[in-house]
Image (cartoon, rainbow, N blue to C red; front, top):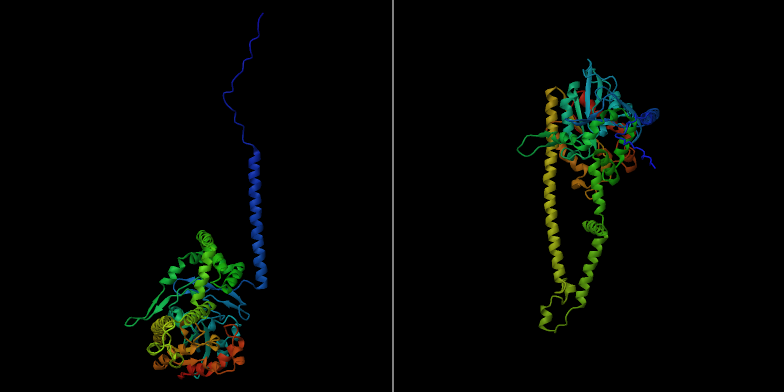
Length: 503
């Protein structure tokens, strides 16, 4: 009997590679097409929003370009629709100027006056024809020599006196003005030495005139800011800032937002430095324990002597004194009474022995507080003298630059709504009211034969209801511009007619 041989099994030596399927390539093409269609729809949506905003004239409040010399300047060829206070549509020409058809070369037979200042002069809150510069131009019309009067507005929001000095020498004098009037605004005194923050209009060069040193204007702080995450971010989106109305809305919101608002800081930080911001927020959250919150709350309360914590502490001191009074030891009458200061204390107002440690501690605390206050007042005086010396030196520098070009130089005090309600107690910064700022500037101008116009003094004498009509929240209304034109007309006419006048 024979057995069948087992079937021979052949081993598969290698796996045959199948050709790539067309399914993967097809899926990839579909995914790419979907991504492109999504991007196309997003672009179409953005363009539609931009078109809608342009028709509604929204998102046209982004107006400043960063500049390494000045800090910031007006964008060129830029339409502006201002809604923050009032309403006005303006257009900045090729040189960032608001007046249409200007030429750097002064036309023959024209007397030019250049106005320098901050947002009070810039006056975006009202139409160009309603600004005090244009009203003065129409009122004065001609000089005594028969020349047509032309008033140019070089105002720029947030500009300090140092920026105006640089602007005068770098731009304004190129227009060959016959007279230059610089408007000094409330708090300009401190803007020449203020550190930049996230706001573009607070990016300024420093100016300082130390004793026995020349006046110094340094733009290193501007260059350093432009290298910061915020500066790099705004520089990188320069084209978007100039052309996008969506960004214009963001900028308008940013202008209104408080830089002390934690939500704003978080959003702004995320866009400028997302990794660092997220890490900082996570760390802050992990450190947010009930104990830490309570400690910060108690610390904040103790900082304010008018807060309830101070009153509670004072009340506790009184309870301690009362308790000590109740626990007075019984002493024998006689010589002890004569030696005890508590006898007849109601007449001679001398604290008892038990009260004395508390009274002594309080006296020492009051003495320390008085010494600290005196030292603080000395520091304020030194700082104020330094700041007002710097401003006056900047005026002197501008006066020299004007004389070198054959132009007159004058100083005008801008109206201030803040000055209507400020007192030494509520003003805050340096406890310096506007009248004290003005008093630091006027004598210098008079001593150097610089024409001086105070537009705040008449407002201080007005009834409050009448004075309020001059301002929106902070800036001038159309009525306020009429006030400046009416008050300034004799002063400007004297400049045009080559007569010096101080008011």
